[in-house]
Length: 254
Ligand code: PEP
Image 1 (cartoon, rainbow, N blue to C red):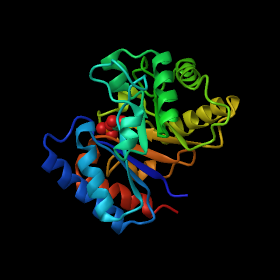
Image 2: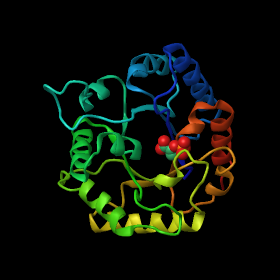
Image 3: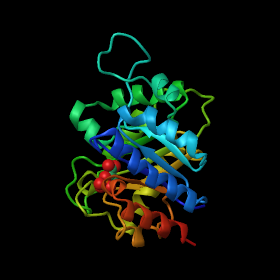
Image 4: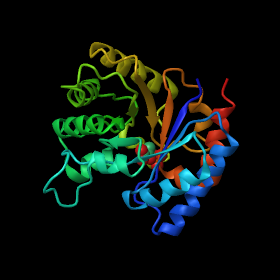
């Protein structure tokens, strides 16, 4: 199966017109590469307009998601955005526990779990991000930390829950640095994460993603990964020539 691509715009771009122009590039990419599944994760404020653009385009292989959601369903939580609001805005996916969000809000593993449960309750497909926070280099993989991130985030799931779900392995030192983890390390971690998911009875429905400086150059090697079902892309999401090359390389994958 072709690898699925998720594009995290982070806190970009600055205006609705720039967001709309950038999204137009994703629509034309989706039309040009109908066999590739694309998910764009823009800032909340652009979701409504981009959803209208998406509906008008008629493309079916491009979806929208959000970069975070509240731990609660509704109520007196100033500044928060609920899963239901996102769903009603046309979102199908939501990022949970991106390392930048974990750090900015000092989120605990239990709080990540609450967000995950909210995403399921709202009918959003979660993309749970995990990555070793403490390690500084590729050779030191903190498996106990990865295990704790996964098992605590995935506790108390509804037993009947069988739907799609993604786990994104993002080593913190690789995000936005131009450095990627090597393929053997990513395969090793991918295998480890699948084993952790199997212990929780979740191995079947979960796709494993890699994120961390995926761009038009690094994708040439990363596309060869066997244990990985897709990529989470940050910086290169803002550069049409880069994300179009990434999609082209993935489309050519054998
Ligand atoms: C990300 O934001 O999840 C990410 C991986 O960013 P970048 O591609 O810029 O490293």
